Length: 304
Ligand code: HEC
Ligand code: HEC
Image (cartoon, rainbow, N blue to C red; front, side, top):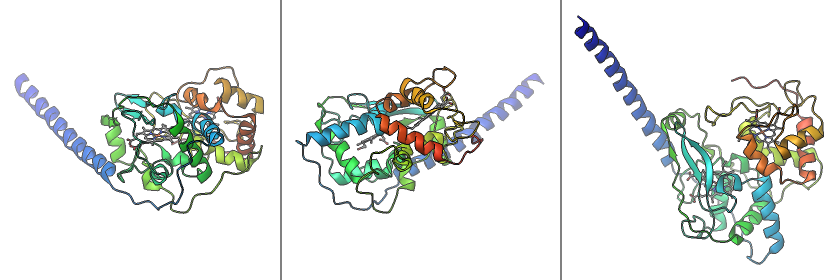
């Protein structure tokens, strides 16, 4: 009797495991198919920046370390860094961007930089896991300055393993919860230059493009779509009572420069890492972001 019961339960569990494996197999196949799709992008006609343009290199350094925070995932020396390291989601690292051994950009032309950064498409046409949505609205001038800086940094040797998704990462990719930028890439032409550097909402909107992936399109925060379970919900940045409605500019500045919230609480990762970039922004850039955030429609925190 006991044996039979056990046998039955055994079959039940075994059957469930088999079904689970079959579903997981299907999810893995779907995930591989999404990553294996080849994308077309438009052709751009931009020259590589001259290597001796020190002004462009200086502007590019600011863009890489502050405004677009490439260094957050590609490392301080751009020779490799970590985006996600989570047993369930996977190991997703930013590769070596220097021209050292193991660097991936040595033979990049401007079209390759455009494709990977502003379209989320790798040189072989496959989609990247990098969240390039943040860079869709980057202007030609900014991209050129970024390339000038990256090509000027010291070459560092070092191979970075390609991203490998864990079981949850594969399932999220299969069901479309892990967004791939290439699937949403812009088709129109890119702006030649960014909005004028001023304490204006227009410039602020340009700067907050990198906040949307986590704080969501309406900037009202909530669960981070691509984040591991350990990440807290992103804060509501609109002028709503649940958001920054009662904040002053000084309190906003304390959050994005020192990583400390209005109530004195230390902000948690991943915001703590984002601050490594925003703390390098200029006062004008921070004031512009504030002007834009204050101009938004007050919205309650996203709940899904
Ligand atoms: C949130 C993390 C993150 C940020 C920010 C980021 N990257 Fe990446 N990047 C990655 C990851 C992860 C990969 C590897 C993706 C893959 O292989 O699918 C990558 C790949 C690349 C590649 C190599 C593509 C290839 O395989 O040839 C280049 C070039 C690159 N990023 C440039 C940039 C630049 C320039 C910036 C800033 C404007 C930037 N990245 C910002 C995470 C990031
Ligand atoms: C990688 C995801 C991510 C990105 C990108 C990001 N944030 Fe955040 N942010 C968070 C999370 C998560 C929190 C909540 C942290 C906590 O509760 O400790 C947060 C909190 C904040 C807070 C504190 C609000 C409060 O109530 O304490 C401010 C201000 C903020 N973010 C501004 C920004 C701005 C401005 C940008 C873009 C330049 C940005 N964030 C980009 C994830 C992100």
